[in-house]
Length: 424
Image (cartoon, rainbow, N blue to C red; front, side, top):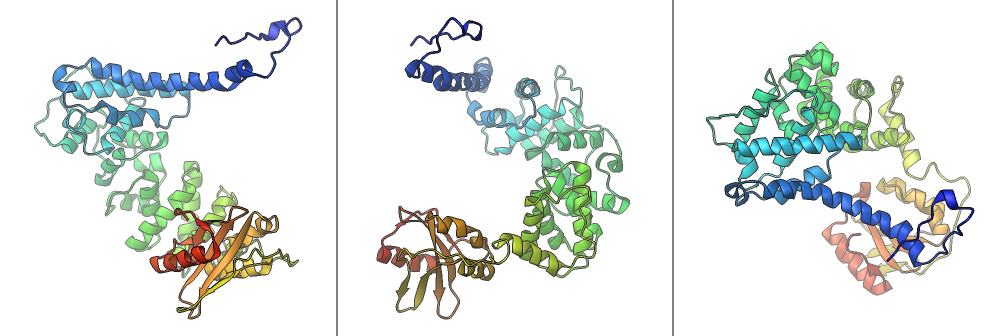
């Protein structure tokens, strides 16, 4: 199909094309085809590299397993990303020429492509000689890669747990920090940890998925949290603060860690305040918890999460006939028809159903509360209207429904005449 040319310099003399197949092709289909062609070119670079290898290597090397690291790699700018892809292929070629078992053998561990992608980022911070061959006395894949890392990228050994970080996706800051530590730069200069936190950094008892989680664990242990407690809190805080700049991240983690050392709490109770602070944008350089109790913080987070305070004006909406009682055992399915009922449901089961009142008033959905007479079974159902589709079933704290609850819901769906999405 010939695409009509419509240049901006000739707008006065050429009439704009009418909206038809030609214009739709030029505006929608052509850009999509160009993007697909660029992605196909990125994948073809690895295939061309594979076809240039000797037959002895091509016979056992599954080159398609190494594509996801190139396609889904995280890099801020397009030019830098292209440079990293070129370095990735250079390192891959060097590893295959030197017979690294992890690269040319059957790929059982999918973390090896991530390891090589992190090394491609590290080349930006270290000059690596890829001309002189490497000789190893071991045939173990992990030991070969670790020896390559020590000889080419690191002048000084890292703490034992830091070697496992290279097999996980790392940000540019984390790769640069590990390279600087391998060059002999002080830990306090790189990560700005205190003396007490620095001591924990060298004796961490387990491996972590990121450098941020490990540093967060060090800060929590320095404030006398137990190992199990510090590990769980570190995962929660790192998931909420991973987008912060490093100085702000340290300030937030230290503030929360010092505050929690004086509070009585459970990990399930902590998740809601942390989610509230992150969503409201309170994690910044001025974040403070001075003169705040854990109870007042949880109450503030509850008022935001469970319906943004109890509604002053009672709002109601008509019933759609979704109430039902199942006998033997007695299970009650009660359709909630006003904002106050939604608020109470959210407070009792600790989820955000209170924010669904506007959707219920507009007739977009219906909310049904499931209860057993002994109070042991409790769940909240969301039904999409007008298709009468059961789209969500949540127990307390947004947990997925148990097998017992699902059996009762199956009987309810058949009795009322609903369509149940199995992902609900």
